[in-house]
Image (cartoon, rainbow, N blue to C red):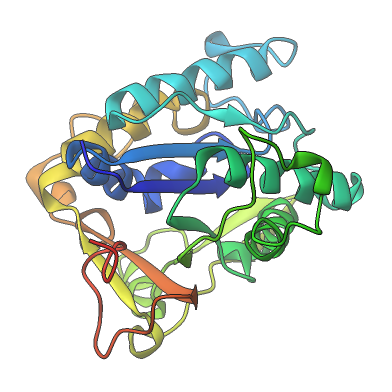
Length: 271
């Protein structure tokens, strides 16, 4: 085991699977403590196949799917903020930030990962989680913020690095050229994927050794992707897809300096 801790804060079960599943698996395999915090149980999502769940039990089913994925990644069981799916901009924002602050103080991660300000495709839940986490990273280090959290087990904590999970603009273009979807449907309209150009990406994690973990994690989320999809019994060309083999991040905040070139390790300068 190492003394390194990674905490990822996302909105829904399956948000972790495509863009961070390999990274979570890799750092868990290296002996890091890896935690996934999820704001909702994804109960507002569609059900890919009718016999997988009903709308009444979808929150329970999607929670079990996320637990399945976390077991495959080798990370701690998921932590839930217990908020309603699709309504994150409407709940009490201060209380939400307070929950993330408390988890940062409890788990004491050196590295925190969340969505960037565009939420990958403008999803309002993703953007809310981005705001909560970015604010919480600062407030967790300030003993005057949420002073009732400060105790022997939950003292203030300074995160060393904050990253945003992103999709490179070039990969979105490549997906479009292959005829793959480059938008998510919300409320009957397409919300296009948004990502920075490679020149603005600070960190690329090669997860090619963990693609199978990543694919198995994706398959856990059957209510979202269905039993039969391009990731089930994936052929070799799918496994070599750069979107699967490499995961991309932007270093948004650092208290340990900035990289001179593209990083290949979220814990660069911390080992």
